[in-house]
Each structure stands twice: as C-alpha cells, then as structure tokens.
Length: 147
Length: 147
DNA sequence: CTATGTGCAAATCCTTTGCAATCCA
DNA sequence: TGGATTGCAAAGGATTTGCACATAG
Image (cartoon, rainbow over all chains, first blue to last red; front, top):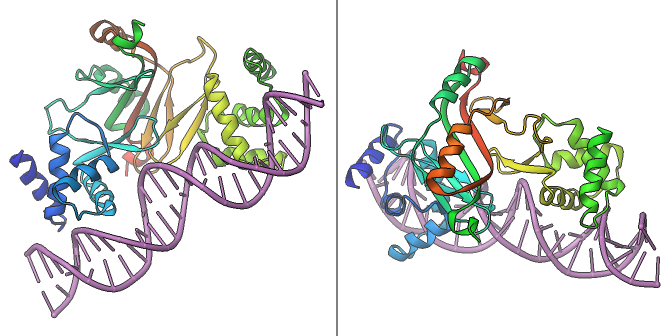
C-alpha cells in the first residue's frame, strides 16, 4: 500500500503535480476497494467518511488526473456512470475481464487473459499498436442461471 | 434492406408494437449507416433531414425499444454518449470487435471473433451462461502509429 | 509569494419524463 | 373511439467549470 502510494507520488511529480492529502485520501479509498468498481460518487462518500470537507468536484478532478497518469482507468458497465479501477503494476494480473450478470448485475472478474493470440493477429493484420483492451462478457451468473 | 425492415416489423408485432413511419425512418438511418456507430443525436439529425418534424425524444424512445427487442445494441467508446449498432442476423458476422485509436479516435472493426476458446473456458470455470460479449482494443491505428 | 489545488454553486451535456395533441387499428 | 405514439419543454442525473479562497513548496 505504501509502495503504491509512493509510486503514484513519483509518477505525478514527473509532471510537477503533487500528491496532496486530498489526493492521497482518494487513492487510499481506491486501494482499499480494488475489487469493487466504485463510481465517482461512491468514492466521494467513502472519502467523506474520513475527511468530511471534501468536495465532489475534487474527486472528479482527481480521478481525471489519475486517469491521465494511467494510475486508474474507467469502465462503463452500462448503468450510466463511470466506474474506476486501479491499474495493476506490470505482471500482476495486468489484464482481466468482467462477467456481467444481466439479471442481478453482479460483476465477476476473470483473471486469466487468454487474448494473446487475438492480439497478435490484430497487431499483424491491422497494423494496430495495442496498448490496452477491455472485454465485457454479458450473460447469467451461476446463481441466476440456475433459476 | 426491405427484408431487415419486415423482420423488425414482425419482431415488434409479437409484442403488439407497431413499426410506425417514424420508427421506420430511424431504422433506415441505422441500416444505411451500419458501420458508423452513430450516437442518438447523430441519428436524430439524419432522420431530421428527411422528416424535419421528428423529435429527439422519439429517437431515444425508439432506440430503447429497438434495444429491448435486440435489434440494436449500444456501446460506449468513452466519449460520454452511447453509440448504436445494428445486431446482425445469426451467422452473419454476429460478433466483432472494435479497435479504438487513442490519437485520432477512429474506430475500426475486427470481423473475426476468435473468442470461442475463452468463452468455453468461462462457461466451464465460472458456470456463467454467456449471451454476448464486447471487446474493445485501445491503441494506435496504422496512420497514427507511424508518426 | 506564486502557482497549484480545492469547495461550492452554477453550468453543461446527455438522456428521460410529463403532458397534451395526434395517429392508427 | 381508445390506446399507442409523438413533439415539445421541463426535469433528471452525471460530470465539468468558474471563481474566490486555501495551501504547498
């Protein structure tokens, strides 16, 4: 956790941005809820619990800043708001996918990647330089599928 | 084209909805711009060219109706608005993926699917019943990558 | 001290909704 | 005729922005 925070601090400093205490609070919430896919407002409320005078605008501004620095990225699961995810350090489950249940809305992560073949093919066939990808799989989770 | 339209008409009729002339206009625009990933507002302007008294709300309502009937589906390319795509008839390029250029914003389609293996694995490992999937690949297109 | 960061409220953008008028079976 | 459909304007929800104040280096 401290490692992640100091890494972020360093990243920001390369372009003269500071890791202020506000930003650190937000980062902590992101770290503590890695698996939760929080929305801006959810992050706001969690930060507010420890620092009640934070503003929603700051949360949005910080999330944008973190996105610019590839510290987080946003995903849209189709519920009309962006959700945010920490980007893992290289080699630590870098890529993963999401299973989205159309009935109960639960989101499960698939940790294997399994797209290397496809990526290789795309790179060759389309001369496209891949930096990232995002796979959403829609359907019914175990619990809902059994009904 | 006529085939697609009458198919849609039939689909709607199964639940007592009509393919009104408004809805048909919107469907025509969707058919004529299959490859364009139009937003609601872009569709609205295109429909307005032939039928100037159409309302934006009708476009939204029709797009929702078409989504409910699995005639179209919406995708979010991260620009803050939904974009719509006709769903191809079974067996005709059903699944495809999108290459999104981070520099120029161009969106290219990859027509091969290549995810069967992964799907099989997900189905088995997670007991998840897949109905659909969506893969977005981010990076730089040929033109931008060469710069 | 100066530029950067922040809270608040207002503004903006996309989308949805209420309602009265219109249309079609 | 009666329920579905529509246009318009207003409402809604998420996000962004303007501005004056606070803060860090």
